[in-house]
Length: 308
Ligand code: NDP
Image 1: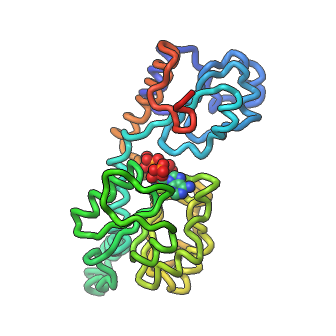
Image 2: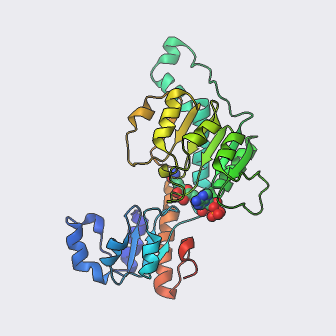
């Protein structure tokens, strides 16, 4: 947890740090029944973990995605779950557009060309075969972040279309009822859907084939949404053009096969990773806990627990 979170939690509550424990199970056995609230980022919250915290009332998760929290188990155990939506949307959208530009125009590779001395010794970096101009961006998951990306994409002159589990109010981008239909209608796919059992491997070989040989895939959502093996094969065979990935099926990772490919940009899950945005997310973790223990209400419950 960030210093601003730790300091404020220390001032307000008695804090036990599981990540500092030499023996996590021993610590849980010792203090588990005294824990009323949990602040976490990537820790797996499941039925077994909740059983070790029989008096827990709330899990305040850092981040908008909460695929590491079993919300059914929390509902069954009467435990509130909060996350940190909105405060990161613009930052993540900026990263998504940066990743798209880097991938289309090979900016990372061009910078390495200069740093390696090739410009001075061997001449200009080769012309990129792809351009942003004229592209159609198909957004999978037109939620908070997806809409922020769409606004930016429009200002670049891109056409925007989308697929999701529902049509979005207040937007007039074309909606496609399936991901394959979206892929067929665009050449650039922006994945910003959450990692859930329903979205797992939604971007599969069939979707990639529909995207076609000029197709570029950007993933700023969750690694599990793309079948990474199918994506790697499509890139190796050239059945799609390129990919920009901020998230992976396993993290942290060193994706050797993807790293060998020329038109691939790989980032280490930095979508929201500026100090200012991470502090805003941390503040929301603190504020959710304070609100819960002073008013009995959270500020930003996850949708599954909003009615609770
Ligand atoms: P939202 O809930 O606002 O948007 C998610 C969108 O995906 C919604 O439109 C939702 O539909 C749609 N969706 C959800 N489930 C499905 C499904 N089964 N099939 C099709 N569409 C679905 O979330 P945010 O925009 O705030 O965040 C999106 C995701 O981005 C997060 O869950 C997180 O995983 C990821 N993320 C990644 C970051 C990074 O560092 N790379 C940083 C922050 C977030 P509906 O409108 O019907 O709910």
